[in-house]
Amino acid sequence: MLTNAPRGTKDILPNQIDGWIRLENKIRELCALYGYEEIRTPTFEHTELFLRGIGEGTDVVDKEMYTFTDRGDRSITLRPENTASVVRAYLQNKLYANAGLTKLFYIGSMFRYDRPQAGRLREFHQFGVEALGEKNPAVDAEIILLAWDFLKSLGLNDLKLKINTVGCPACRPIFKRKLTEYFTEEADELCGDCRRRLEKNPLRILDCKVDGLKEFMEDAPKIETCLCDDCREHFNALKKFLTAAGVEFEVDNRLVRGLDYYTKTAFEIQYAPLGAQSAVAGGGRYDGLIKEIGGDDTPAVGFAAGLERILLALELQKLLPEQDKKIAAFIVSSGAAAETYAFKLLIDLRRKNISATMDFGKKSMKAQMKAAAKSGAKFALIIGEDEVAAETVTIKNLETSAQEVIPVAEVSDKINCL
RNA sequence: GCGGUUGUGGUGAAGCGGUUAACACUCCGGAUUGUGGCUCCGGCACGCAUGGGUUCGAUCCCCAUCAAUCGCCCCA
Image (cartoon, rainbow, N blue to C red; front, side, top):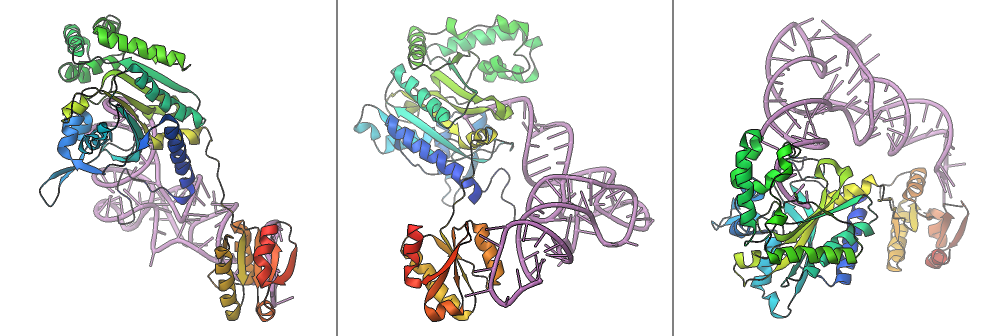
């Protein structure tokens, strides 16, 4: 149907725009406070970037990308997330040259071919932050705090911060192997999904809804027992920093990230009332990504937050008051001569920085007055033959109903002083 | 990708296999000769998501499609 937007996409209508602008303002304000600069990368990239960056075998890459061949026979993909692009831009533009630590943020739409649901769209918007070039866990903490403060400053309650460590190339394979061994023995007890995960991604079995509560889960290998010294210290330091900052967090050693590039820190902020799509922000460290994409071995951390979900949460908490934009003057006219006169006044007022409008529909005076009242304008400026002849305007205060006739030249002063 | 629920005008919603598809709000017009918010009167569904089928006849029955929504999955 010509009159339907594609599935999973949405118009953002004038009556919703205030919420978006509020989010964007808050983001820019907070990022300035934390010292992050905005970057805008292309909406599409070479498909290869995502294959390498996100990782083949992940759901996002395997079944959710909008990929097509352009007229020059290039494989192009609409970005399903922005971290890979930021890293690409960082390398291409040599942003590492001027700073030990490069701190960036972005706001933009991402594309994923998912089944739409409340809080899950095919084109959706993310705000994200990336800190490139530093391995200190204090940066992990800074990133998490930025996400946390952002959500809190919007007024959201009932947020839950979960953190975990997923290890690094040195220790994760050990953990994976232990998991595989352990769950292979329990294979008969596993659900179908998990039996598949056994080969592809045994970590995922840990947060399976079906098997998660089964008793053998209790004795499953724990990541803590496999961590290398570096990862263990990193995680402990992160907890120390978060505690120092006074944020409550929960260590959830079943928290796993879906994208391959994560190392060490993984975190997620949830807003439970949203239901199935409760993750409102998530991220972590990705020390291997920059090298994977062709740069030097460079550590980095970041997160992304889903703006639609945040807006849904704000709506649930009734934190999106309607702001009505009232104008100062509504011009009402009757007769052809008056229309020109009125139009001139309309333009003059705007040039004097007074918001003004009129009804262009040539309706009855009564209808125009109705429209004036509905518009919320403070004044109705009434113009008929008499006013045109005398070069005056009847100005009516729509709140008090008081009205008087004044020279047209004095209208703007009158409005300004009332 | 899988399973469930739903789909009536601008909005919220009644409704039954068979004359003009309730009601409320919004909107439009009128009651006023150049004036709103109150009141009163009147109007507004080439038709009940779309396309097929069953039937003498379907908005109400069946099928498909599309869309929304919930759960799974995944993730922000």
